[in-house]
Image (cartoon, rainbow, N blue to C red; front, side):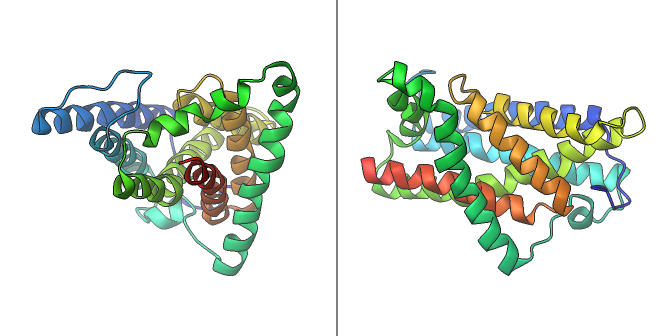
Length: 244
């Protein structure tokens, strides 16, 4: 069984935590723009380094802050234990990184390969959001953003999506249906894909989110999923560096 802690997470609180993270992302971005007297970048254009990082800060504050508050209110008050944030270094680093890299090269490529045979521009379109992410960066800003995406983003996102949301779904459904684990894995994966806000990349991100949720379910921890997420993002980062 996945849940072996004193936590009793609430799906409504998880939804409010996600909403708070999205709002905080906008608030910290607006604060940055106000302080620097900068203009908001266009939706489809490259974001400035400051705008991108300020948005990350707000989003990640919500991703980490909301499960922390939930642990204090409905859990054991031991944040680390309540979200399963433990790492078995030799196992998690090796297995996690291999799983993440494999998902990029096997799962994602298999998913889009049939469509790439039809559309010659699909591969470029799939990489466009990542290119926009760092397009306005100088050398220092570019590598700093790469560090954030490869190291910090996986930690914050795993804490929320697999440490909090997945557990909240399971807590809410386990007394209602025997299929609570499968439903929770699918819903958390779909939510993970939707939050990234990229229609073309949604199928791959949602499927990857389900893989991560299954790993968390089987291990009762998010240590492996953190490194799998890092490996997945690292492959995309290496491709960006090679194309720069």
